[in-house]
Length: 121
Image (cartoon, rainbow, N blue to C red):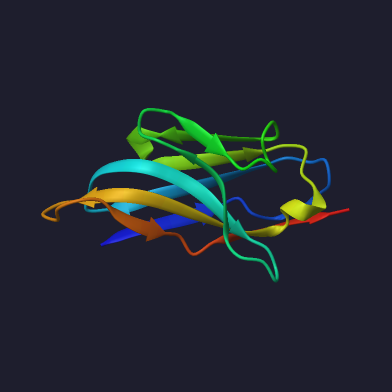
C-alpha cells in the first residue's frame, strides 16, 4: 500500500506565504513525477505544478513567479512554496505522484486526500 499525506494548509492573508508538504510512504521502489493540483469551489481540479525525478518543473500560468515546487527524494517528499498569495488561490490542494511499487510492473498514479488553503482578502 502507498499513501500520500499533505500538510501545511491553513488560513492566510492575501500577500502572505505558505509551504505545503506531501510525504509518500509504503512499498515504494521509486517515484517519478510528483505534483500539486488544486480544486476551488465550483471549479474542476487543475494542475498547479509538478516536478520530474530529474528536477524539471512545470507550473500553471496563474502561479508562475509566485510558487516554487521542490522535492526531497531521500524523504519521498514534495513541497510547494507559495508566495504572494491571492484570494483566487483558495482551494483544496492535492498531492499527486507516479510511483513504482515492489512486485508491481509499471508506474501508477496516487493521490493524497487534500489540504485546504484559504486566502483572505
